[in-house]
Length: 209
Ligand code: PRP
Ligand code: URA
Image 1 (tube, rainbow, N blue to C red):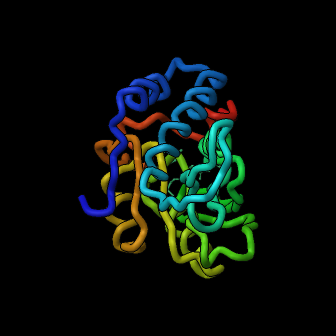
Image 2 (image 1 turned 45 degrees about the horizontal axis):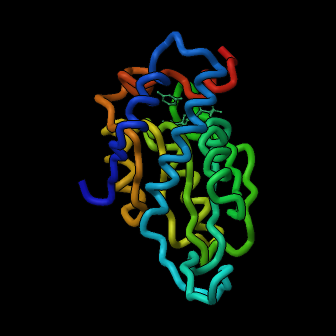
């Protein structure tokens, strides 16, 4: 599918299986999410442009590769996005961070916004939006619309699990935004949960249910 990358690295797939398991503890779930986020971050940044700068090694000077352009922005959709954010910041500590507070209304499945804070100069930075779950895509779409209103033009979306219904809705609403996911699951159930899925990502991360 165009604009969709499924990260099928064996380590990602193995860790994801452990996360899906209903017996996995809150602590293990958080640790696994942080570990997976390092591997997903590696994939979502794989094609970043490089430039060179002159450095001195102990032996000589050389033109050495460094990432070109302005610092990245990671935009976390609260709460569960923070589970991916932490590991990504381990890998790219200089990244700027945006927080988009959204929760799903359990009846309508609409995304309700309760918080937004982002760096001012989104227009000339790559913005990587992170949220473990793409179900109906209402949350991802709402977050990306808000980021676009604030000037973002170069956006990628990174998640752990996606439902086919969410991919279709997302690509209709945000055709210019590539999706990176660790798995494409079967379908959404009547309550809007991803099947087979892993349950409620936020609750599993924070032990709130
Ligand atoms: C979960 C998840 C996504 C959203 C996905 O968040 O982290 O943000 O649901 O569903 P959608 O694609 O149908 O919008 P939730 O609303 O449960 O909030 P939380 O992260 O605070 O638990
Ligand atoms: N949000 C979750 O946390 N899990 C799902 O399966 C769907 C939306």
